[in-house]
Image (cartoon, rainbow, N blue to C red; front, side, top):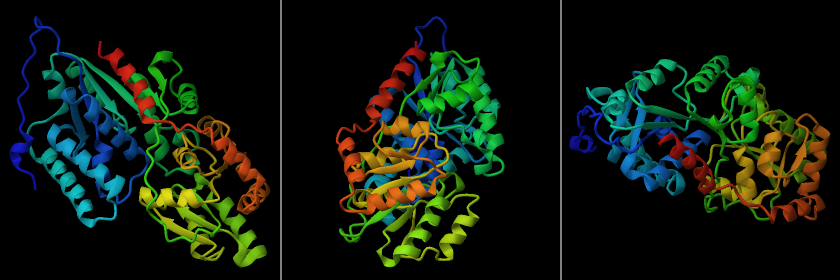
Length: 428
Protein backbone atom coordinates (compact mmCIF):
# COMPACT_ATOMS: atom_id res chain seq x y z
CA UNK A 1 0.00 0.00 0.00
CA UNK A 2 0.98 3.63 0.30
CA UNK A 3 1.96 5.46 3.49
CA UNK A 4 -0.84 7.44 5.08
CA UNK A 5 1.34 10.55 5.26
CA UNK A 6 1.34 10.66 1.44
CA UNK A 7 -2.18 12.04 1.65
CA UNK A 8 -1.55 14.91 4.04
CA UNK A 9 -4.28 17.54 4.06
CA UNK A 10 -4.17 21.19 5.03
CA UNK A 11 -7.34 22.65 6.58
CA UNK A 12 -9.05 25.40 4.59
CA UNK A 13 -7.83 28.91 5.30
CA UNK A 14 -10.37 31.68 5.02
CA UNK A 15 -9.43 34.12 2.29
CA UNK A 16 -8.71 37.76 3.10
CA UNK A 17 -10.64 40.03 0.69
CA UNK A 18 -7.93 42.70 0.98
CA UNK A 19 -5.29 40.39 -0.51
CA UNK A 20 -4.57 40.05 -4.22
CA UNK A 21 -6.67 37.14 -5.54
CA UNK A 22 -4.75 33.93 -6.06
CA UNK A 23 -4.32 32.61 -9.62
CA UNK A 24 -7.15 30.41 -10.80
CA UNK A 25 -6.80 26.81 -9.66
CA UNK A 26 -7.67 23.97 -12.03
CA UNK A 27 -9.70 21.08 -10.64
CA UNK A 28 -9.75 18.05 -12.92
CA UNK A 29 -12.40 15.40 -12.38
CA UNK A 30 -10.85 11.94 -12.88
CA UNK A 31 -13.77 9.85 -11.64
CA UNK A 32 -14.19 7.88 -14.86
CA UNK A 33 -10.48 7.13 -15.01
CA UNK A 34 -10.30 5.85 -11.44
CA UNK A 35 -13.36 3.66 -11.96
CA UNK A 36 -11.81 2.37 -15.20
CA UNK A 37 -8.87 0.90 -13.29
CA UNK A 38 -10.51 -2.54 -13.37
CA UNK A 39 -10.66 -2.50 -17.18
CA UNK A 40 -7.89 -4.48 -18.83
CA UNK A 41 -8.12 -2.32 -21.97
CA UNK A 42 -9.20 1.33 -22.32
CA UNK A 43 -12.43 2.61 -23.83
CA UNK A 44 -13.13 5.98 -25.42
CA UNK A 45 -14.11 8.34 -22.60
CA UNK A 46 -11.48 7.11 -20.08
CA UNK A 47 -8.91 7.67 -22.86
CA UNK A 48 -10.04 11.28 -23.10
CA UNK A 49 -9.88 11.74 -19.34
CA UNK A 50 -6.38 10.27 -19.35
CA UNK A 51 -5.31 12.70 -22.08
CA UNK A 52 -6.61 15.61 -19.98
CA UNK A 53 -4.81 14.36 -16.88
CA UNK A 54 -1.50 13.89 -18.69
CA UNK A 55 -1.76 17.30 -20.36
CA UNK A 56 -2.42 19.28 -17.19
CA UNK A 57 0.06 17.31 -15.10
CA UNK A 58 2.67 18.33 -17.70
CA UNK A 59 1.59 21.94 -18.20
CA UNK A 60 -0.07 23.11 -14.96
CA UNK A 61 1.31 20.98 -12.12
CA UNK A 62 1.41 23.78 -9.55
CA UNK A 63 -2.22 24.87 -9.81
CA UNK A 64 -3.77 21.48 -10.59
CA UNK A 65 -6.08 19.69 -8.16
CA UNK A 66 -8.00 16.42 -8.62
CA UNK A 67 -11.55 15.38 -7.79
CA UNK A 68 -13.43 12.06 -7.77
CA UNK A 69 -17.04 11.16 -7.07
CA UNK A 70 -16.84 8.63 -4.25
CA UNK A 71 -19.08 5.64 -3.56
CA UNK A 72 -21.39 7.77 -1.40
CA UNK A 73 -22.09 10.25 -4.19
CA UNK A 74 -19.82 12.97 -2.77
CA UNK A 75 -17.35 15.01 -4.80
CA UNK A 76 -14.05 14.62 -2.99
CA UNK A 77 -10.52 15.88 -3.48
CA UNK A 78 -7.67 13.46 -4.19
CA UNK A 79 -4.16 14.14 -2.96
CA UNK A 80 -2.14 15.46 -5.90
CA UNK A 81 0.80 13.10 -5.50
CA UNK A 82 -1.48 10.09 -5.19
CA UNK A 83 -3.52 11.14 -8.23
CA UNK A 84 -0.46 11.77 -10.38
CA UNK A 85 0.99 8.42 -9.38
CA UNK A 86 -2.25 6.70 -10.40
CA UNK A 87 -2.40 8.54 -13.73
CA UNK A 88 1.16 7.55 -14.60
CA UNK A 89 0.55 3.95 -13.55
CA UNK A 90 -2.60 3.49 -15.63
CA UNK A 91 -1.07 5.32 -18.60
CA UNK A 92 1.96 3.03 -18.56
CA UNK A 93 -0.29 -0.01 -18.29
CA UNK A 94 -2.72 0.92 -21.08
CA UNK A 95 -0.12 2.33 -23.43
CA UNK A 96 2.54 -0.32 -23.30
CA UNK A 97 2.27 -2.92 -20.56
CA UNK A 98 -1.26 -4.27 -20.89
CA UNK A 99 -0.08 -7.88 -20.99
CA UNK A 100 1.46 -7.70 -17.53
CA UNK A 101 -0.65 -8.97 -14.64
CA UNK A 102 1.65 -7.20 -12.17
CA UNK A 103 1.15 -3.88 -13.95
CA UNK A 104 -2.61 -4.43 -13.85
CA UNK A 105 -2.54 -5.24 -10.13
CA UNK A 106 -0.51 -2.09 -9.41
CA UNK A 107 -3.18 0.00 -11.13
CA UNK A 108 -5.99 -1.72 -9.22
CA UNK A 109 -4.20 -1.34 -5.87
CA UNK A 110 -3.75 2.39 -6.44
CA UNK A 111 -7.42 2.77 -7.39
CA UNK A 112 -8.58 0.80 -4.32
CA UNK A 113 -6.38 2.94 -2.09
CA UNK A 114 -7.91 6.12 -3.54
CA UNK A 115 -11.43 4.79 -3.00
CA UNK A 116 -10.69 3.78 0.60
CA UNK A 117 -9.27 7.18 1.44
CA UNK A 118 -12.22 8.98 -0.11
CA UNK A 119 -14.68 6.92 1.92
CA UNK A 120 -12.88 6.81 5.27
CA UNK A 121 -11.21 10.18 5.81
CA UNK A 122 -13.35 12.88 7.48
CA UNK A 123 -12.06 15.74 5.30
CA UNK A 124 -11.61 16.42 1.60
CA UNK A 125 -14.99 17.71 0.46
CA UNK A 126 -14.50 19.54 -2.84
CA UNK A 127 -16.52 22.50 -1.57
CA UNK A 128 -13.90 23.06 1.15
CA UNK A 129 -11.13 23.27 -1.45
CA UNK A 130 -13.09 25.83 -3.47
CA UNK A 131 -14.04 27.88 -0.42
CA UNK A 132 -10.45 27.95 0.84
CA UNK A 133 -8.99 29.18 -2.44
CA UNK A 134 -8.35 32.90 -2.58
CA UNK A 135 -9.30 33.23 -6.23
CA UNK A 136 -11.23 31.56 -9.00
CA UNK A 137 -11.52 27.79 -9.43
CA UNK A 138 -12.08 26.13 -12.81
CA UNK A 139 -13.63 22.67 -12.57
CA UNK A 140 -13.09 20.50 -15.67
CA UNK A 141 -15.24 17.39 -16.22
CA UNK A 142 -14.01 15.52 -19.35
CA UNK A 143 -16.21 12.46 -18.84
CA UNK A 144 -19.79 13.69 -19.34
CA UNK A 145 -20.57 12.67 -15.74
CA UNK A 146 -21.65 14.33 -12.47
CA UNK A 147 -24.51 16.43 -13.87
CA UNK A 148 -27.22 13.81 -13.40
CA UNK A 149 -27.87 15.60 -10.11
CA UNK A 150 -27.51 19.37 -10.43
CA UNK A 151 -27.20 19.82 -6.66
CA UNK A 152 -23.59 18.61 -6.81
CA UNK A 153 -22.49 21.48 -9.04
CA UNK A 154 -24.86 24.03 -7.50
CA UNK A 155 -23.25 23.27 -4.13
CA UNK A 156 -19.79 23.89 -5.56
CA UNK A 157 -20.86 27.18 -7.13
CA UNK A 158 -22.22 28.48 -3.85
CA UNK A 159 -18.95 27.57 -2.07
CA UNK A 160 -16.82 30.05 -4.03
CA UNK A 161 -15.90 31.58 -7.36
CA UNK A 162 -16.25 28.51 -9.60
CA UNK A 163 -16.37 28.16 -13.39
CA UNK A 164 -17.45 24.81 -14.86
CA UNK A 165 -16.00 23.39 -18.09
CA UNK A 166 -17.97 20.37 -19.27
CA UNK A 167 -17.18 17.95 -22.12
CA UNK A 168 -20.16 16.70 -24.13
CA UNK A 169 -19.16 13.64 -26.18
CA UNK A 170 -22.59 13.13 -27.74
CA UNK A 171 -26.31 13.39 -27.00
CA UNK A 172 -27.24 10.23 -28.90
CA UNK A 173 -29.34 8.69 -26.09
CA UNK A 174 -31.64 11.70 -26.41
CA UNK A 175 -31.72 11.59 -30.20
CA UNK A 176 -32.01 7.81 -30.66
CA UNK A 177 -33.21 6.31 -27.35
CA UNK A 178 -34.19 2.99 -28.95
CA UNK A 179 -30.50 2.15 -29.43
CA UNK A 180 -29.60 2.57 -25.74
CA UNK A 181 -30.45 1.03 -22.34
CA UNK A 182 -33.87 2.01 -21.04
CA UNK A 183 -32.66 4.62 -18.53
CA UNK A 184 -30.05 6.23 -20.80
CA UNK A 185 -32.34 8.83 -22.34
CA UNK A 186 -33.51 10.24 -19.01
CA UNK A 187 -30.01 10.30 -17.56
CA UNK A 188 -28.57 11.98 -20.66
CA UNK A 189 -31.38 14.55 -20.76
CA UNK A 190 -30.76 15.55 -17.14
CA UNK A 191 -27.04 15.91 -17.78
CA UNK A 192 -27.48 17.99 -20.90
CA UNK A 193 -30.16 20.26 -19.43
CA UNK A 194 -27.98 20.87 -16.37
CA UNK A 195 -24.91 21.42 -18.55
CA UNK A 196 -26.76 24.05 -20.57
CA UNK A 197 -27.77 25.81 -17.36
CA UNK A 198 -24.65 25.42 -15.20
CA UNK A 199 -21.61 25.10 -17.46
CA UNK A 200 -19.63 28.23 -18.22
CA UNK A 201 -18.08 26.51 -21.25
CA UNK A 202 -19.07 23.32 -23.03
CA UNK A 203 -16.46 21.47 -25.11
CA UNK A 204 -17.72 19.23 -27.91
CA UNK A 205 -15.74 16.93 -30.18
CA UNK A 206 -17.34 17.83 -33.51
CA UNK A 207 -19.50 20.38 -35.28
CA UNK A 208 -22.15 17.66 -35.61
CA UNK A 209 -22.30 17.26 -31.81
CA UNK A 210 -22.35 21.05 -31.36
CA UNK A 211 -25.27 21.39 -33.75
CA UNK A 212 -27.33 18.62 -32.14
CA UNK A 213 -26.66 19.94 -28.63
CA UNK A 214 -27.54 23.49 -29.65
CA UNK A 215 -30.80 22.40 -31.26
CA UNK A 216 -31.92 20.11 -28.45
CA UNK A 217 -30.57 21.72 -25.27
CA UNK A 218 -28.73 24.97 -25.92
CA UNK A 219 -31.20 27.22 -27.68
CA UNK A 220 -30.52 30.14 -25.30
CA UNK A 221 -26.76 29.59 -24.96
CA UNK A 222 -24.32 32.27 -26.07
CA UNK A 223 -22.29 30.90 -29.02
CA UNK A 224 -19.00 31.47 -27.17
CA UNK A 225 -20.00 28.95 -24.47
CA UNK A 226 -20.11 26.04 -26.97
CA UNK A 227 -16.68 25.25 -28.41
CA UNK A 228 -15.60 22.55 -30.89
CA UNK A 229 -12.28 20.84 -30.11
CA UNK A 230 -11.78 17.58 -32.10
CA UNK A 231 -10.21 14.70 -30.19
CA UNK A 232 -6.60 13.83 -30.76
CA UNK A 233 -5.36 10.45 -31.89
CA UNK A 234 -2.70 8.65 -29.86
CA UNK A 235 -1.05 6.06 -32.09
CA UNK A 236 0.05 2.82 -30.45
CA UNK A 237 2.84 0.68 -31.79
CA UNK A 238 1.66 -2.31 -33.80
CA UNK A 239 3.62 -5.01 -32.05
CA UNK A 240 0.51 -7.05 -31.36
CA UNK A 241 -1.40 -9.58 -33.48
CA UNK A 242 1.65 -10.28 -35.63
CA UNK A 243 0.65 -13.95 -35.88
CA UNK A 244 -1.89 -13.24 -38.65
CA UNK A 245 -0.57 -14.28 -42.08
CA UNK A 246 0.49 -11.31 -44.19
CA UNK A 247 -1.33 -12.81 -47.18
CA UNK A 248 -4.66 -13.10 -45.37
CA UNK A 249 -7.44 -10.85 -46.61
CA UNK A 250 -9.53 -9.50 -43.73
CA UNK A 251 -11.71 -6.58 -42.67
CA UNK A 252 -12.14 -5.11 -39.17
CA UNK A 253 -15.16 -3.78 -37.28
CA UNK A 254 -14.05 -1.80 -34.23
CA UNK A 255 -16.51 -0.78 -31.51
CA UNK A 256 -18.94 -2.01 -28.87
CA UNK A 257 -21.33 -4.67 -30.15
CA UNK A 258 -24.65 -2.82 -29.98
CA UNK A 259 -27.46 -2.12 -32.48
CA UNK A 260 -26.30 1.43 -33.28
CA UNK A 261 -23.06 0.08 -34.77
CA UNK A 262 -25.07 -1.93 -37.34
CA UNK A 263 -23.26 -5.25 -36.95
CA UNK A 264 -26.27 -7.11 -38.35
CA UNK A 265 -25.81 -5.59 -41.81
CA UNK A 266 -22.22 -6.80 -41.97
CA UNK A 267 -22.92 -10.23 -40.47
CA UNK A 268 -25.74 -10.84 -42.93
CA UNK A 269 -23.46 -9.73 -45.73
CA UNK A 270 -20.74 -12.15 -44.64
CA UNK A 271 -23.25 -14.99 -44.47
CA UNK A 272 -24.17 -14.30 -48.10
CA UNK A 273 -20.53 -14.03 -49.13
CA UNK A 274 -19.65 -17.33 -47.45
CA UNK A 275 -22.60 -19.07 -49.10
CA UNK A 276 -21.21 -18.00 -52.47
CA UNK A 277 -17.42 -18.05 -52.00
CA UNK A 278 -16.88 -20.52 -49.14
CA UNK A 279 -13.35 -20.53 -47.82
CA UNK A 280 -12.35 -17.85 -50.31
CA UNK A 281 -14.40 -15.33 -48.30
CA UNK A 282 -12.21 -12.72 -46.58
CA UNK A 283 -12.25 -12.79 -42.79
CA UNK A 284 -14.27 -10.38 -40.68
CA UNK A 285 -12.73 -9.52 -37.30
CA UNK A 286 -15.05 -8.05 -34.66
CA UNK A 287 -13.10 -6.02 -32.10
CA UNK A 288 -14.97 -4.64 -29.09
CA UNK A 289 -16.85 -5.68 -25.99
CA UNK A 290 -20.47 -6.82 -25.96
CA UNK A 291 -22.81 -3.95 -25.19
CA UNK A 292 -26.59 -3.78 -24.87
CA UNK A 293 -29.73 -4.71 -26.81
CA UNK A 294 -27.61 -7.03 -28.93
CA UNK A 295 -29.39 -10.36 -28.50
CA UNK A 296 -29.93 -10.87 -32.24
CA UNK A 297 -26.32 -9.98 -33.03
CA UNK A 298 -24.86 -12.29 -30.39
CA UNK A 299 -27.23 -15.11 -31.36
CA UNK A 300 -26.01 -14.87 -34.94
CA UNK A 301 -22.36 -14.97 -33.86
CA UNK A 302 -22.91 -17.88 -31.49
CA UNK A 303 -24.95 -19.86 -34.03
CA UNK A 304 -21.78 -19.80 -36.11
CA UNK A 305 -23.49 -18.20 -39.12
CA UNK A 306 -21.39 -17.22 -40.93
CA UNK A 307 -18.84 -19.83 -39.79
CA UNK A 308 -15.95 -19.09 -37.47
CA UNK A 309 -12.90 -18.44 -39.55
CA UNK A 310 -14.98 -16.25 -41.80
CA UNK A 311 -16.02 -14.23 -38.72
CA UNK A 312 -14.02 -13.98 -35.49
CA UNK A 313 -15.18 -12.17 -32.35
CA UNK A 314 -11.99 -10.98 -30.65
CA UNK A 315 -13.48 -8.90 -27.82
CA UNK A 316 -11.68 -5.84 -26.53
CA UNK A 317 -7.98 -5.79 -27.38
CA UNK A 318 -4.93 -3.80 -26.24
CA UNK A 319 -4.03 -0.78 -28.36
CA UNK A 320 -0.98 -2.49 -29.87
CA UNK A 321 -3.08 -5.41 -31.07
CA UNK A 322 -5.70 -3.09 -32.58
CA UNK A 323 -2.97 -1.14 -34.35
CA UNK A 324 -1.50 -4.32 -35.78
CA UNK A 325 -4.88 -5.50 -37.04
CA UNK A 326 -5.73 -2.15 -38.61
CA UNK A 327 -2.43 -1.92 -40.46
CA UNK A 328 -2.99 -5.28 -42.13
CA UNK A 329 -6.70 -4.88 -42.90
CA UNK A 330 -8.19 -4.34 -46.34
CA UNK A 331 -10.44 -1.74 -44.65
CA UNK A 332 -12.13 -0.73 -41.43
CA UNK A 333 -15.92 -1.10 -41.66
CA UNK A 334 -18.07 1.50 -39.86
CA UNK A 335 -21.71 1.09 -40.95
CA UNK A 336 -23.06 2.93 -37.87
CA UNK A 337 -26.50 4.50 -37.82
CA UNK A 338 -25.23 7.36 -35.62
CA UNK A 339 -22.01 8.52 -33.95
CA UNK A 340 -20.92 11.45 -31.83
CA UNK A 341 -17.40 11.52 -33.26
CA UNK A 342 -16.01 8.29 -34.71
CA UNK A 343 -12.58 7.89 -33.15
CA UNK A 344 -11.99 4.48 -34.84
CA UNK A 345 -12.26 6.24 -38.19
CA UNK A 346 -9.52 8.73 -37.26
CA UNK A 347 -7.37 5.94 -35.79
CA UNK A 348 -7.66 3.79 -38.92
CA UNK A 349 -6.77 6.64 -41.26
CA UNK A 350 -3.85 7.56 -39.01
CA UNK A 351 -2.53 4.01 -39.42
CA UNK A 352 -2.90 4.23 -43.21
CA UNK A 353 -5.92 1.92 -43.30
CA UNK A 354 -8.79 2.59 -45.75
CA UNK A 355 -12.27 3.04 -44.29
CA UNK A 356 -15.73 2.14 -45.55
CA UNK A 357 -18.24 4.03 -43.43
CA UNK A 358 -21.80 5.28 -43.20
CA UNK A 359 -22.77 8.47 -44.94
CA UNK A 360 -23.00 10.44 -41.68
CA UNK A 361 -22.21 14.18 -41.36
CA UNK A 362 -19.78 13.53 -38.49
CA UNK A 363 -17.88 10.94 -40.56
CA UNK A 364 -17.56 13.48 -43.37
CA UNK A 365 -16.26 15.96 -40.79
CA UNK A 366 -13.73 13.61 -39.20
CA UNK A 367 -12.73 11.79 -42.39
CA UNK A 368 -12.35 14.97 -44.48
CA UNK A 369 -13.53 13.22 -47.65
CA UNK A 370 -10.99 10.37 -47.51
CA UNK A 371 -13.17 7.28 -46.70
CA UNK A 372 -15.85 5.86 -48.94
CA UNK A 373 -19.29 6.80 -47.66
CA UNK A 374 -22.16 4.30 -48.04
CA UNK A 375 -25.80 4.32 -46.87
CA UNK A 376 -26.04 2.26 -43.65
CA UNK A 377 -29.04 0.30 -44.96
CA UNK A 378 -27.80 -0.45 -48.50
CA UNK A 379 -26.49 -4.02 -48.24
CA UNK A 380 -25.75 -4.18 -51.97
CA UNK A 381 -23.52 -1.09 -51.85
CA UNK A 382 -21.58 -2.63 -48.96
CA UNK A 383 -21.30 -5.99 -50.76
CA UNK A 384 -19.86 -4.38 -53.89
CA UNK A 385 -17.42 -2.26 -51.87
CA UNK A 386 -16.21 -5.16 -49.71
CA UNK A 387 -15.62 -7.42 -52.71
CA UNK A 388 -13.74 -4.66 -54.49
CA UNK A 389 -11.55 -3.82 -51.48
CA UNK A 390 -10.81 -7.52 -50.93
CA UNK A 391 -9.22 -7.66 -54.38
CA UNK A 392 -5.44 -7.15 -54.30
CA UNK A 393 -5.70 -4.98 -57.39
CA UNK A 394 -8.68 -2.93 -56.18
CA UNK A 395 -8.77 0.44 -57.98
CA UNK A 396 -11.20 1.87 -55.43
CA UNK A 397 -8.90 0.95 -52.54
CA UNK A 398 -5.89 2.33 -54.40
CA UNK A 399 -7.73 5.62 -54.93
CA UNK A 400 -8.54 5.92 -51.23
CA UNK A 401 -4.91 5.20 -50.38
CA UNK A 402 -3.95 8.02 -52.72
CA UNK A 403 -6.30 10.37 -50.86
CA UNK A 404 -4.92 9.06 -47.57
CA UNK A 405 -1.41 10.25 -48.44
CA UNK A 406 -2.54 13.80 -47.59
CA UNK A 407 -4.15 12.80 -44.26
CA UNK A 408 -3.20 14.86 -41.23
CA UNK A 409 -4.27 13.14 -37.98
CA UNK A 410 -6.11 15.27 -35.41
CA UNK A 411 -3.75 15.98 -32.54
CA UNK A 412 -4.15 16.49 -28.82
CA UNK A 413 -1.87 19.51 -29.21
CA UNK A 414 -4.51 21.25 -31.31
CA UNK A 415 -7.29 20.06 -29.02
CA UNK A 416 -5.67 21.55 -25.92
CA UNK A 417 -4.74 24.76 -27.72
CA UNK A 418 -8.50 25.36 -27.98
CA UNK A 419 -9.30 24.22 -24.44
CA UNK A 420 -6.44 26.18 -22.85
CA UNK A 421 -7.59 29.36 -24.57
CA UNK A 422 -11.02 28.87 -22.96
CA UNK A 423 -9.45 28.26 -19.54
CA UNK A 424 -7.40 31.40 -19.92
CA UNK A 425 -10.54 33.43 -20.57
CA UNK A 426 -12.42 31.85 -17.66
CA UNK A 427 -9.48 32.36 -15.30
CA UNK A 428 -9.50 36.15 -15.62
